[in-house]
Image 1 (cartoon, rainbow, N blue to C red):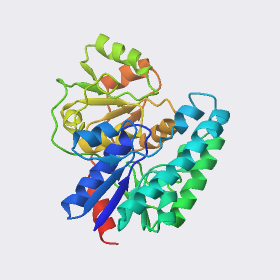
Image 2: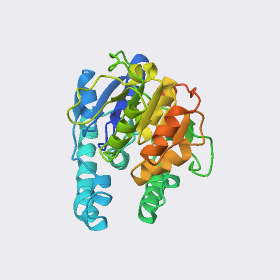
Image 3: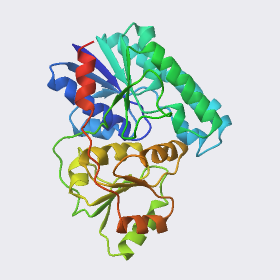
Length: 312
């Protein structure tokens, strides 16, 4: 079976989660073609894969970090159409038996190319308080539920109103490959593009005598997987979903310090799960690090998704 795997281009976590499933697909005898681009491409390269890079899209940057709706309409919207076109052409060239994706634009391209589709994403309207983002997530979720043969919903939080009707809940996804442990980790801090305010939290942790290891960023030399480092750590501090999933699989308690609206939604939901606590200031980080949550216990959901895709 030949499976096309496409990841969304915002942030590296989209790539690492889909790589986790891609490797499970290969372990079960499938051949895989990759597409996506963005910051996650360096992890694709580290693992020795080549991938197709369609037109990038940055809704978070355009809507939350730039000019709001006007920049979204002039930037992300036309780029979205180009990305659908590019992935459509890629699918026609690859001619796969199936497409698995967390990229909404790949999900739009698959029916146009006549390729059976499975979606794997946590993005859902229940994450958002902002009316525009909530409406957009609702429309995309409804479309993907109708277009896909299966909609896999990877979570750590208990079932609740934030889960869309009709999805298949699976465990957290994490790329689990051999990689060196970064430093001698006590508290591992994994910032994102929008979380520069974590710097003050790192200073507070170090003032309390904690060894805070900061990973990520443009100048950081990436490793193929963060799981060995997170497993070796006593505590994780991060802003959002990707590292929450990895901390869950690693079994390491995690403080979630959100900055974007999607991150705030993830933090709100994850705080109901064992092993996670939401913090919203450096003072809260310091206090929570002295009395961390219990260890999370979750199975990596990548194998389950891969097996389900191949059984369709």
